[in-house]
Image (cartoon, rainbow, N blue to C red; front, top):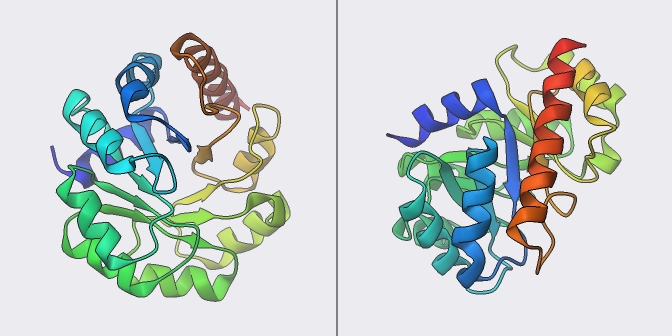
Length: 212
């Protein structure tokens, strides 16, 4: 299954990106299993984690139904390394046109980080699959609503940073299509059962936004 197909399927069920910063390769299989069993299919291992390419390769091979890739991707060279490891998802804290274009060239889903309307439009012009609104602490729901009013209607907006089960609904009402979830889901050293409980809580909170 190609990256775009996996991304579309995940967005329709659980548009939440698991950000596994600090994940160790030896725990990637158990943490990945906890997430996939909970219904999460978007998994990101930031490149400032220990031996991230090993974790990405393990996750991609073990969970082919999931869209696995890397976060904190800053250069085209890193995009190619993630692709070689089997990753299909590129997430960045910033917008870099070369990074986006390289991900597009390789058939990967790319979610660059943007903070302003200018960055958002530039990222879309470069071929971004969606936009990571980062850091969300600096982009309150009112700002999401304002961006939604001017961006193309089909643009995917995913706030990241400080997202919790209690503030998802207000962002969703403002026009967010999904979220990236980091330390509230996984912290280095967390056990699989804890991640499983957190994942279920966030999925329930997301479902609540759909009913609101």
